[in-house]
Image (cartoon, one colour):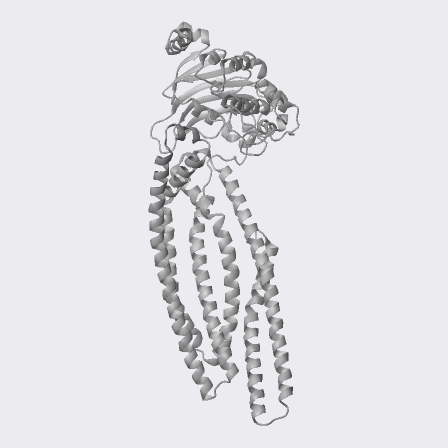
Length: 589
């Protein structure tokens, strides 16, 4: 709360104190009014002619009571405003922390089911629980301050009165705390099911799966799957809510007994003449309100306990530490690359996977050299890309830039040397200009290289023809947007890679969605587009691969063959066989 808004916290604390004292002042004024009225009645009955003077005092007390009521209304107004302001500030603050942490963690975490559970719980509880805690603390502060004042008043009547109040609320408190522990444990146990139901809901309502769901008639099947999971979760949660309701009933019953038991005692004291009629009303209302304040305070503390339990999910997420971090004493990333990138005896496997994806791999990419990776699916090609981008670190071996281990370089500075079009390239539902500019946000959006990159990727002419040119939003998600074809989206990804102007351009299946003519036009002048840069190309299309200076054929995570296209064809090995098969397919047509 303090970090999100210190001024709001101070204002809230001040209002809590004022609102805590006002109920006691209001009770005391009611006592004075009743005693003054009682005195007037006695004076009138005794024939005292000065009763009118006493009534002036009643009017004065009533005026004070009205002023206290107005002050309470004003404080409530400001308190609600401050509470809302704190809620907004704290929620936004927590979301910003959550977003920063999500960006900071390693890519490997996103491939872990345990991490996905931790992230899900943090996303569920992080934004909501701090808001609940803010409101709970404010209410607990108000109820606590009022309770202290009421207890002080009740002690004047009988020191045991506060003890009676405490005993009355204990049963409800114990049941509430027990409920909090159980629902917290249940949520941890059922996180996977919660995530699966959200996934099914996303599939049913989202655009990604819309065509296939309709074509294959899968809608009712997924709806039934979603319903079964939600029914199970709902039934279990309702059982917890039933126990919670029983706890509330027990608490309210014990409080009711305590209230009317105390009323008998207070009435007896009045009849004996120990206290006045005004005192009786004041003490009874004080006990009744005090019990309400105590119950609300205890409920608030129990709620805070519950919030804290669930907020531990957020803290668990915040404790996740990335393995890929900047070194304490980093080496300088070279401005101009002289030797290039070297992969030396690199071995790697993914988390919870026994088999190495790549093993004892050795190759280099020299400045200005185009290297191609080919091989069957699962051979380790995309893994090599992730390692070169330092999205992962190898479990053994070294990846070096100009002879320097990339783990000794600042991560952000090193990654600026690399541009990539990944196999699962991203569609940003922003303007065409922004889609390209995101390749290098250090430059101005209006930089002329944005248009130049669009032309290099073969989509410049199409974008110029849109109603707002490069400033046209892409996708129908937003008003005025234009939808692109799959191939056009891939060209946007290529344009983004060209705009980055990095020393190493990585293209992972860069032509998978392009038609033959577009692919031919782009790669015919590819060397011109990457002039002075290195390139790593992964492709199943040998028409693209054959233009590389060096081709590496991967098999089971190892280099089985390497050389230029002509050299590998002369070798007449695996590469030559695959090339002939693909060429034969085109000839058959």
